[in-house]
Amino acid sequence: MPELAEVKLMTEFFNSQTKSKKFRAVHKSPESKVKTDLNLTPTDVDGFYVEAQSRGKESIIILKGVKSNEQRTLNVTYGMSGYWKKVHELSKLPDHSHLMFEAFDGSIMCLVDVRRFAKWKWVTGWSENRGPDPVFEFDLFVENLKQNSHKKIFNKPICELLMDQKYFNGIGNYLRAEILDRANVNPWTPANVAIENGKLLALCRIVPAEAYKIGGGSIKDWKNPYGEQKMTMKEWLQCYGKKESTIDKTGRRVWFDKKYLILNEEK
DNA sequence: CGTCCACGTCTAC
DNA sequence: TAGACCTGGACGG
Image 1: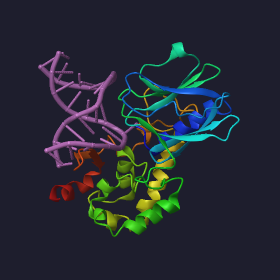
Image 2: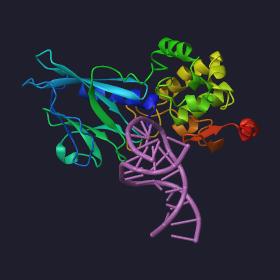
Image 3: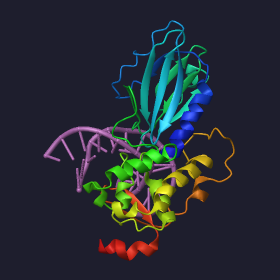
Image 4: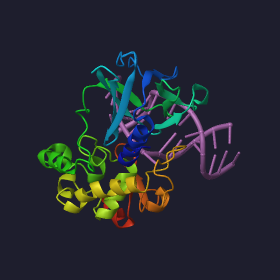
């Protein structure tokens, strides 16, 4: 579920709920199969502070010892259904909470994830197999494409490459549909040709930024920290779930305008 | 009841 | 390029 906009919103929500708060431990649910050793938090007796950042569909949470200089970084991805929720006590732990940050005041930040596709691990930096953030690192994002566009993988249709997190970190199924639709680009145009279209690249920044602005998609049970949404995601979407669709080579459904139907049949 | 579908990766023939 | 990993909501009989 969460794409660039939702991951960004979630890290902001995480920070708003944890700023200046002291944490004592991190736990996982018994059902979770993630093997990461969560005892490796800073060892301060006074606990640690936390701060989240996002880059595309990936987030990191930095844990800093309250008095020491100890620091550790946890990388968190959200799969299809992960989101953060804060509760005031253990007895209020939501169903499907799988990663829990326990504060000294008894409150808990929970990674709620019905499908359990979310993952976490200790890291020293952002994943190397993911590119720059198209919204918050736009120039690096463009540079990364230009430097790699000679590669064979750029012969693939743009609709397939748009889902490749090495080049389009944060773009998922609804964003690719909206970007291609607004760019007026045939989804089966070879990627190296399509990215010559400056409009397409500009939309890789504009479209997720808009999704962010309206408060992101409908994550079940997750409330946008910016309060009442002026527009729902359903109203905002122009293509995804509304126009034509077919299954792409990776098994995902691609949404596109009917004017590309014929060309799609020929491929 | 059953079958299909979902805003995402992973790894194994 | 299948499947595997998961739960639950929508919808059909």
